[in-house]
Amino acid sequence: MAVIGSGPAGFYTAYKVMSKIENSIVDMYEQLPVPFGLVRFGVAPDHPEVKNCQDKFEEVAESPRFNFVGNISIGNQAGALPLRTLLPHYDAILFAYGASKDRALGIEGEDSLKGIYSARAFVGWYNGLPEYSDLAPDLTTGEEAVVIGQGNVALDVARILLQDPEILKETDITTNAIQTLRRSKVKRVRVVGRRGPMQGAFTIKEVREMMKFPSVAFHSVDTSLIPEDVSKLPRPTKRIMESEALSEFSELGIPFNDRSGIIPNDHLGRIVNDAADWTDEKRARHLPGMYCAGWVKRGPTGVIASTMDDAFSTADSIAMDWYGKVPFLNAEGGDSLGWDGVKDEAEKQGCRRVSWEDWKKIDRVERSEGQKSGKAREKFTKVEDMLAVLD
Ligand SMILES: Cc1cc2nc3c(=O)[nH]c(=O)nc-3n(C[C@H](O)[C@H](O)[C@H](O)COP(=O)(O)OP(=O)(O)OC[C@H]3O[C@@H](n4cnc5c(N)ncnc54)[C@H](O)[C@@H]3O)c2cc1C
Image (cartoon, rainbow, N blue to C red; front, side, top):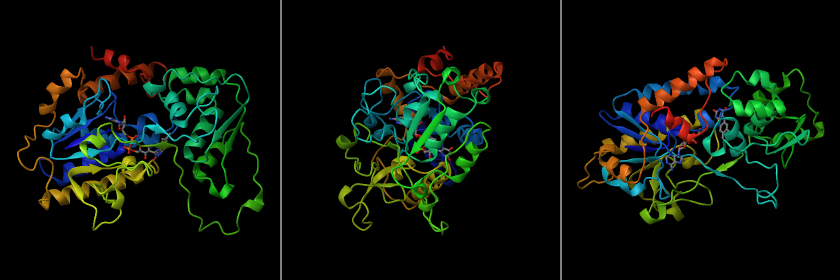
């Protein structure tokens, strides 16, 4: 099976498939030289316990039946490896490539005014995502920051802006971000939502954490906006990002629902080809060997635990189909060579593969660089610096 994306969805599905299907082999393609998706580039640096899931992922990756194919983006863009080169060499493809687009608000000036950043960019910047390593947000021109949206990510951003940089510097936040935060003049953060306090999507835990900061005070909310019985209120979910189709999807007949931003599937991870009727289980037809998990399967909401649950449900479908003799890709005459069948084409495209051993080298250097300044790790923020470790 080829897995596209090395975030929680990819790893948890790989883990379950490998344990349910004896002798199954997984090749995991990741566009960056480093694994773990939003666990590395999204989860706040001062929440290291959330990243403990990486221990499980490491365990999966140590299996001789698992191959990490890092630094290879799947798609049609320059330097990427087209999806069609994978198809003849695998029984199944799992799309687990998350959400890599900002959800735009459609407000005038959103793109053109100075000092406006998407959550993906700002979070990516302090977490060392190469795409945003040069963001250089200016935090010195005013004392007021406004975060639009009221989910946990909004509170992550507020916390990073208000926390003492001398405390943050011990986390794996980038040194560049610490230097910028030390110069920050921001004193007030307004977390703006379009409805009342009960519609905020953040969890109480995140608010309590900030309430403990010694020099941070909160404005109280108008109590008339709070209903008497709050126990039955649903927790709203908010999306800050969007998934998009891989560039060759339409050419290869793989559906994508632009409106809901997901790959149409039967809720159990089987990709179905009848986009108009994909919720109609009787009419929707499964594309042989095509599966999805995580944020591309259900939309970009939910935490690592919910991503694990839905990855497990996709893995159950794959195992059920495999043992149920349902047709997979290349039913007639595939070579099942996996990466061995793909690598010549990858070389021709100028792709440089980063293996799991290579990633461990990068990991060791990051950890030892971090140790020098009392941090868990000092992340490389440029792809070329990651690759330089391997030269
Ligand atoms: C800012 C932020 C903070 C969060 N904090 C928490 C938290 O504290 N606790 C918690 O439980 N959850 C948190 N979450 C949610 C959690 O990160 C997600 O539930 C989870 O990461 C989704 O997993 P995924 O595998 O679907 O996607 P991702 O984690 O995004 O993984 C997708 C992977 O696919 C790769 N990829 C993309 N396109 C391609 C391509 N074309 N070719 C090859 N590879 C590709 C990406 O580089 C990435 O590595 C947070 C999310 C965000 C955005």
